[in-house]
Amino acid sequence: MEATAAIKSMLYFVLAGLCEIGGGYLVWLWLREGKSSWHGLIGAVILVLYGVIPTLQPASFGRVYAAYGGVFIILSILWGWQVDKIAPDRFDILGGLVALMGVGIIMYWPRG
Figure 1 (spheres, rainbow, N blue to C red):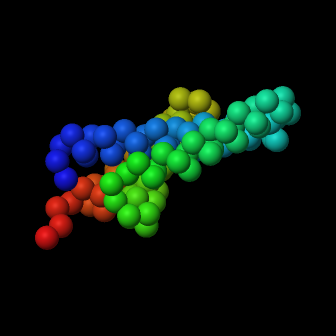
Figure 2 (cartoon, one colour; figure 1 turned 90 degrees about the vertical axis):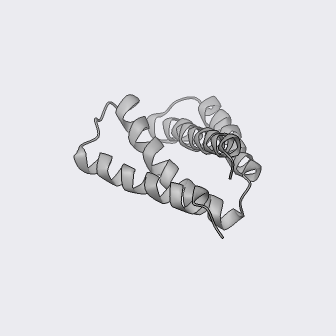
């Protein structure tokens, strides 16, 4: 995969992750913290976008979603740190790095 395509692919992963986590968070706020139903509705729309964005990836469904799992781990750690104010510990960081290596192998390792 050429560098430009890989960068575009990574951006799709980040965008999908932000939609999944952000949409899920809005639904969480609605159902668990009594926020307005608008939070739930907007969250649902954002979650639909999360379902659309991965279709822009160049790989097959299974490969994209397998790799996306690693991206989701990293973004969830960052979300928890920035939004919930829970700093990652060394095991969070180590686990996130292992997951990120998995993403690189699954999506971007040259295949013969």
